[in-house]
Length: 164
Image (tube, rainbow, N blue to C red; front, side, top):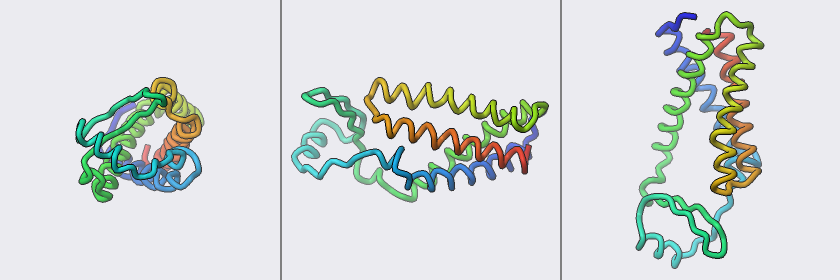
């Protein structure tokens, strides 16, 4: 039940790489991210939003409910996306490695069960609250929750076999 710094570092890198690759694969599945539709470009809408703000989130209920995220055009930078995504996955893997280390006396199946339960807590606390409060589609919410849960289990399996 001791957390070793070397194990955390190697677990973060291995698990982060597994999670980064997994999230790349799941971006192409027909749920989760692919369930987000795109509104045809409407210059008048963009101008109205730009006049109100250049940054933030807005919820509208004028005839239809919508959640609009507004960022300046330069926000959309693939290098920044990929860099932050990888760092985020490394941070997730750091926590997964720490949890697996703390529950090391358990058997492999029990460790994966704990990670699965943590994943379910996350889905309930994040994906299904967004589904409820913000109207995220069921296909998106279930897809993101499933992708995260399966990714965490895959990373935990690799970490348990090679690091912890």
